[in-house]
Structures are given as structure tokens and as C-alpha cells.
Amino acid sequence: MINVEIDGKRVEIEAGRSVIEAAHRAGIYIPHFCYHNKLSIAASCRMCLVQIEKVPKPVPACATPVSEGMKILTNSEMAVKAQQGVMEFLLVNHPLDCPVCDQGGECQLQDIAVGYGGGVSRYR
Image 1 (cartoon, rainbow, N blue to C red):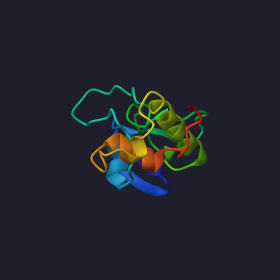
Image 2 (cartoon, rainbow, N blue to C red):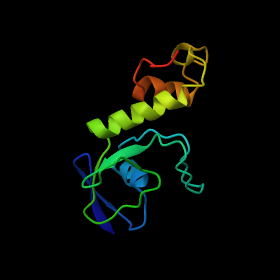
Image 3 (cartoon, rainbow, N blue to C red):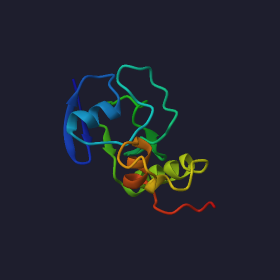
Image 4 (spheres, helix red, strand yellow):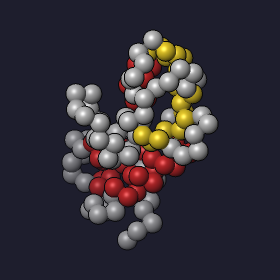
């Protein structure tokens, strides 16, 4: 077992587990589309980007293994901007009515767009 810190919460988890699993254990939600604990790691959606102390760029939480003493930030300015940027690109080729379409509450893309998107697209 190793110790990591996620948004100020100390978490004890088995070595080799991913950041997203450690966050789940701490009760912290990280938005994601392609991650499922019973599937191989794809890290293709990039929605789970987080900041790790002493790492210059955001990293995907689903594909990053935890290490002893790691300090993870899921809601830092870097992580939030990265998630908003990913959400914006995911919606580029999606109908513009996504946040208000008639799927109302039945669509994970819609839920995450409202919760983690920037609200306004720079594209028409």
C-alpha cells in the first residue's frame, strides 16, 4: 500500500493502481468517457486530465499509475482549463443544441458538457 494526496485528502491505495481509482476511493469524481475498470486503458477521450505536482502538463488520470507521495489536483486552474478544452473539442462536430437537447438528463456527454464545459464555444 502507498499513500497519495488528492485535493488535500490522504488516500491509501495499492501500488500500480491509477489516479482515477485513487480519486474514486477518496470520493472525488473525475469526469471521464472512455474509462471503465473492467476494460483496458485507452485514455483516448482525455476528459480525465488532472494536475500532478512537479509535472508540467496535465496527465490522464485513467492511465497514470499512482506513486508514493504523489500530490494530485483535480480542480486546479490547469486541470479545469484542460478539461474545458477537451470538452470544447469533443463538441466541435456535435450538434450545437447539445446542452439543451431533448435527451435531457439521459446523456453522459450532456451532463459533463454542462458540468465541466466552458459554456460557450469559440466555433460556429
